[in-house]
Length: 343
Ligand code: F6P
Image 1 (tube, rainbow, N blue to C red):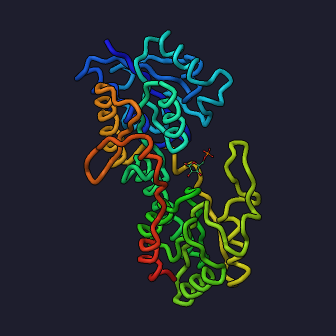
Image 2 (image 1 turned 135 degrees about the horizontal axis):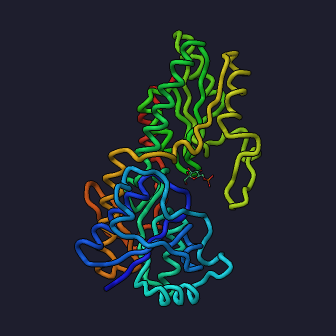
Image 3 (image 1 turned 45 degrees about the horizontal axis):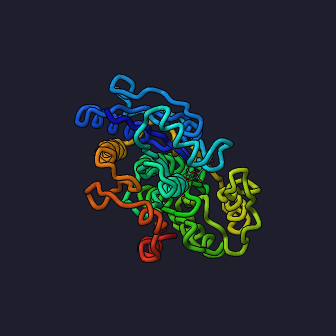
């Protein structure tokens, strides 16, 4: 009987457990496969640290946030015992025929390299940022958007009561999808994303015109947005190699600048990891379950070097090469479409 191992790597994301459940249930029921889970992403794989995964373990999991397997941002080549030779030995010892890696861009790049080094591995795309070019949507994104939308709705009533400008910072280091979608859904007066520079003068002009109409301005800003006049001066490299704000998030940088320039009292809220925690939405549960079931088909077909993706309404297969070719950012036209009604 074939046996496969599942790992979740990179930042957690609502829907990971639904993928695991979908894969195990279909794998067991339709193919008679068995599964185990590697703990804490690549660490569990290189150290052979596993937990059993079967129907009983995954029962009722689709609504649960986080990942029952744990996750980390370490890579399979950077772990002390990492590298393909050791991983092959771990897989042989555990009698595992192939690995399912659920993760974002970093995970897919590591999986592609391992595949090139002879490891049987497939992928499932994951990120709340929705910036993977291979797939139209990633699970977790809809949940993040709905949490950010609710935050806008709540900030609006307190903003209106005090006639303050409210600035909400949402996640999105390199792509502004969460800001764009939640900002549209919540009726924000300005949406600021990493793909599109906007000057402080322009932002303040929008804020002032909203206030002049007797409304409390609402600004949604993605964490990766930078004021063109400030450059990268307020960011620093974190231990994981990613840029992190030096003075607080961009929302906290922006709010006092808006207040100073416009004379309108302004408050910042940084939504942070609340966007990643808790139960997935119905949409994300369905997408994640479908991806999990599709990846059990993929390993049954020994489709090593490929990952599952959503194209339109269909779950398809793409190879790692293609999956990594495109980083999906918000296109200019899509931003301009909504920008005309800012202010
Ligand atoms: O890539 C997903 C993401 O949630 C980003 O939107 C965010 O910048 C980052 O992860 C946060 O990472 P961490 O949890 O490691 O601070």
